[in-house]
Length: 489
Image 1: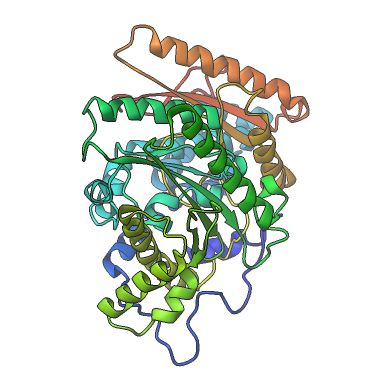
Image 2: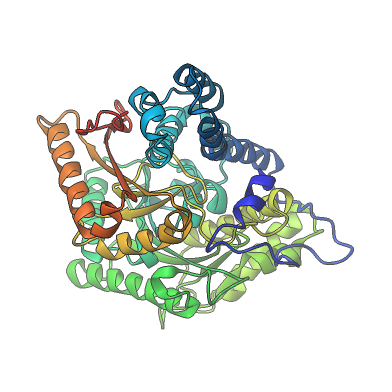
């Protein structure tokens, strides 16, 4: 895993590892924090290796096929190699014509990226089961904090794809919603609609937990402690202050909109979290009753300050730090409990990065494999697997798409590889015609994406695959047939 990461560090737009990682303990200190869940860390590392490995085997496999493409028994040998290395066969039409036109490695590369992603989706339940059962923050804990829903909008940057299970140690469940946007600039109107729907469900008694439980909206921006001017949030020009202020402003707008529409007693709380994507340490911005922007709690500093303490002493130190920071007394008891647990849980992730990635990721920039446009699938949650552009139409999602294409122009196009885009939408199987409408939506978005980037499309450097999934998981990531049967697998 680390060897592959070092190899990737030489790619265009990807930074090399720097010395003195920010979260490595000082001289004489052992990197074994008393509050770290070592077993969960090992389970998450197994998950990372298993999932990442499905994609990292693609390029070596295609290189092996390229060297054999003129052999007489190429098709048979190629399928054996693909099955052994990737776990699936390749489209035979692409292999069969290799002796005439040469192997279409671009098309095969995109096919393998999409197919490997579908393999991850198909095996998601068994892949995630070992770590889900040990997550530090689960549904019962959130209910004990007086929360029926936690709606998280991280930046769509691929480095935040592992936000829930790794950075926050939060188990995905019905009460957790994640919608990513470039720069964490979520749609306020869409969030008001989501809050209104959940509030109606709460008032009708259809949500688990106390009748007075609340809805928590979290915005997660990101920074780079190693290269703040180059590897921060692309949507904000790698300006850390701008990224923080923009996310805080969106939260303020949502809070104001709900209050003005439903009154000051509306059951909505907000929280701003910053993530250092080099080390996965977090910064929690406490709300302030007077200004709306209070003190900041840094988990990296807490890690260093509490290293060497007994578990209960370290836990008490976290509680004291939170109480001291909450000068405006804006934190309700349930939210304070959640903040304390988030900080404690993130200590395990800091040590995870220290143990498995030498304190700072080797690839501190982008290293995603494809762009997902439309609606994301929550089944795959791992750093730098894909860049997500949340959209209903290409027009309203254009800024997110443009950022993603810009990223992949450095990652792929500069190396002669295409930009793979998976257009994905959900449907409700119980609603007549829902699947057909989702497929039609995929086709419209795919055509609009191809029209938006005509130069890439004309050069064969934009490969779009369409897929649909049932909201109730009866069908997951089923590819939609396209005119070219060789790529519709």
